[in-house]
Length: 261
Length: 261
DNA sequence: ATTTGTGAAGGGTTTCACAGCA
DNA sequence: TGCTGTGAAACCCTTCACAAAT
Image (cartoon, rainbow over all chains, first blue to last red; front, side, top):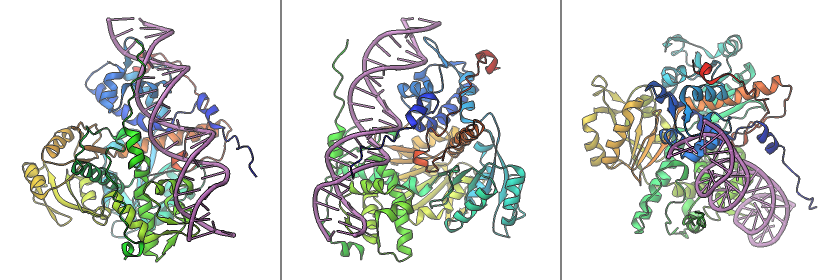
């Protein structure tokens, strides 16, 4: 019964050939943002130290990340800002334009439709869709909101690749299914639920309440530490803001039934 | 010159005593959400397999995560839904109410103020602040928007612990400084920039454009793989959606100057 | 002299497989 | 029998320290 552990490797070979670590991918947008800001200020060259500071990471991490893209720096000098912007943009696939549909034009949908950050960076909000007849026909961010009926038609005829789900939770899965059926292969989900999609479709979830809850955890932890008399210099850096202080863990022996009641 | 590598440990000792891994903390909100949904459907007990599915993770990961909080399950049975909700809530610090101020009442600020997910889960939006005189005085989500002048007074007198920055990028750092000076110890930053804060203050950044860019990367990668004739079953699961396909990495030998132009 | 790019080391996270318990 | 809780292994990511390059 104890077979010798299946050699479940297939990936690290690939990784050496081309794959960029997911952690690196998730930071490339930040580097891009920092570089763009530098470019606007007319900076031509930047060192890993400077760029790292601007992006809020350590310089070693930055260099390691960039090394996965190629050797785009010059030793003793640094990185050409414009060139690096081009390379990162290309790697992220921002040299082509991506078409986006936003479904659910409530408060959040409105905000997303008007959000400048999308339009400015390779993304075109191509359509707005809502289920509510009172919203359909409105003009938001220069687009006319259409009804749910038009969803499939809109996505396939415009060739939309990415769907943003900003509906209430209960509606999200059905919307997602229809988006995928119509040809969308990437979904950004703002609804507070898990979306199930077929292989080959990617979902990213952004949950605002989740972020606050994580903050609350660290707030509480900080307060508990202060009470306990410990007060070490706490990491303000997100990426290493772990296990900061040791609250005595009261292990309250409240019975389960009592706690549940 | 080769000193014997500084023993820069202090933490793993703590971690064994109480610290919950950051990766685990970041998933607790999802478990909580799934559990709440189950509770509303009247489910009393749930297995790690079922809960994991509902939360979109693997069951082994779920069990490992929960084991960091304590032994709150029953072997052969599963977890009591209500009891687990209580334990996770307590660990996240949601048994107390957190007061939040939102600064920047534009499209996004509006959406955040009206977002139900905050209010429903231990967070009270206690104040809304904006720099624009045309917005000040408006009523949003039952609160009157006040001016920037009132920021310090509002935060300290109401005892607000968390600040949400939904301003344009250039204003964000100054707002953040004032929030911190007034006593805020946690910041949720929606502005597309790095915020510098003193030790003991935590910042989390949410960037909508970043999420889309990460999606775009994987979209592009997917398309490239299809062209190359490879089409392995791709992981739709976010957490392991790495190094999916091997695009030949064209290594375009465009000169730097040319690319920059 | 300066800064990149990178092996190597170390720590954190995920996954496996099963012991332990109900 | 069924499911949790957990060592151990595998994997991923970060950090260090320095060779290589300009």
